Amino acid sequence: MEPVKVGVIGCGNISDVYFQSGKVFEAFEITACADLLPERAQAKAAQHGVPKACSVDELLADPNIGIVLNLTIPKAHAEIALRALESGKSVYGEKPLAVAREEGERITALAKEKGLLVGC
Image (tube, rainbow, N blue to C red; front, side):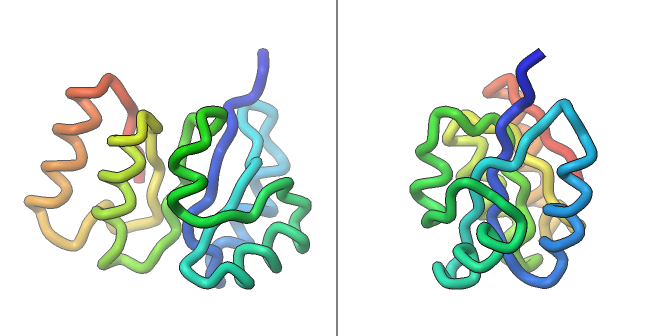
């Protein structure tokens, strides 16, 4: 089985744990990363052997990425999750799913509407 391609959005401190543990699983492969600070994404890509560092827009537009790993700051979780779903990608986020219940409900409703998965 071909591994699912994963793109990481948010390359702060917590991302190291995900980049490292992501290498253990055969079911998925982290193939791209993005951050508001391009140099941070480039540094994490180099450090962890990720083939592509890019902008958030480029990552969301990449047709090869099936899952977005959302490691942004909590107040950006809902925006990034919704954008990922609108881009046709399932999304897994670092807690919390969103900072407001209504945002979380929008995320789960959109995922259901599009036939995509959400995890947190």
